[in-house]
Amino acid sequence: MAALRRGSEAIRLHLCRSFSGGVGRLARERGTERRDAASSRVSRFCPPRQSCHDWIGPPDKHSNLRPVHFHIPENESPLEQRLRELRQETQEWNQQFWANQNLTFNKEKEEFIYSRLQAKGSGLRTKSGQRTALDAEEMADFYKEFLSKNFQKHMRYNRDWYKRNFAITFFMGKVALEKMWNKLRQKPKKMST
Image 1: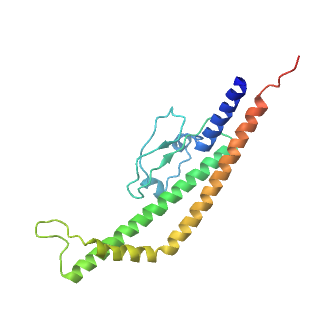
Image 2: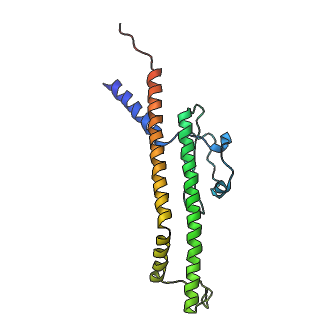
Image 3: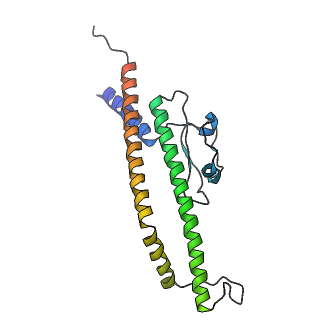
């Protein structure tokens, strides 16, 4: 019975590792990181090279999301590689969306504040040099308008986000099954005497 528990514990541990996403090494180490505008926005955080797990970096200053640095194992299977690449693509897409969304939000918020202060005849700064602020009720008008104007964009984002997450979950299941199958195939068959 103890041997069965040890075996089931090993399978459980294997499944947990498979589903936790610990399946990659830094993309930079393999030279697969894309050098585009989106990646230049992401933090320059770099985990130790000898690490064998995914690392989560500090929040990106534009998107406010924490980028994940994926560990790439030496014996990565094609299915594991596809999962890692899908996760990386999703992260880049997510970072890009929220960086653009936050930029738009901040720009429109500043324009709203400026127009309201001008309508009141107030300046951007008080006599003491501090920045003039609007009260919560006035800002609520902006938030409501911004959310209403971007409703369709957020709906498309949510739909795509769920599609991507279901695809990632599906591939994680396939990777876990592939690893279990490979482990079972490698076990030598016991001969009865």
